[in-house]
Length: 78
Image 1: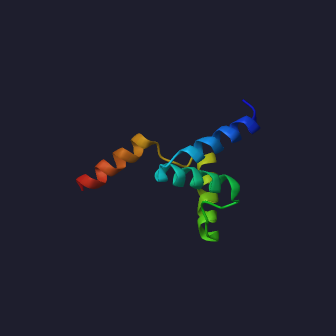
Image 2 (image 1 turned 45 degrees about the horizontal axis):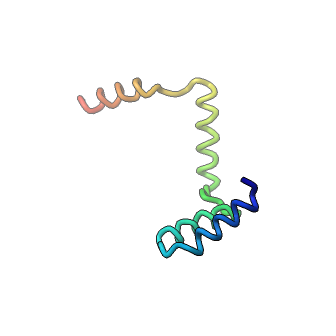
Image 3 (image 1 turned 60 degrees about the vertical axis):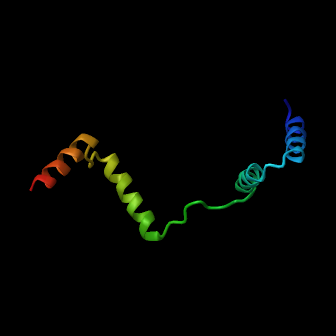
């Protein structure tokens, strides 16, 4: 199905429906596609923290999920 055919089918379906919830959701999805919105706006401090964390991961400076669980267990016991 070509892009033009798909658009026509969508327009026809939209014109036929009275489901306001569906119409709102379609509109929301189209707005996301058409807007150049930034979903997450991070501060400089947050960007620096992410960058530092990525470097730590590259250098192997992290705990596995199991290690973190074990540390939590020990912390809760004390």
